[in-house]
Image 1 (cartoon, rainbow, N blue to C red):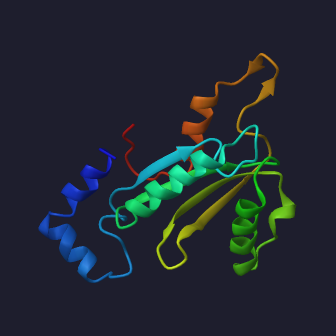
Image 2: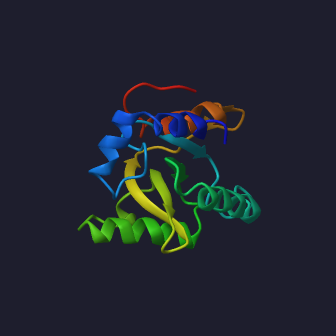
Length: 159
């Protein structure tokens, strides 16, 4: 939650406030700063995922919904029906190809206060799972998850 303080500090700068006065649909300062919560197992069925962890993420997203906070997670065959439905609805609404056209994807979301749920903002289909390899010879999960989040980042990065 400390990372959100940077955006709050930016929101006090007069030029930033002036910029967002002409863009009431935007959250201050989403065009200038984003906090990306990269969650490797969000929305996955057990044993990979945990519904209690998903609830905690949703609570965090709801609590800080007025901040520039975004959720990035991995879509894969273990993703639950709810998450798959959100992604499929997003793709179909944009005359997309539907979720059946790819097996893996990186998903960017934000909290939608009207729906009281996350709302998909972007989908990046992938050819391969987040972690590559087999058995004891897989890529490291934390690094893969951070890369998943960075796919949606623009500008300067701070970790």
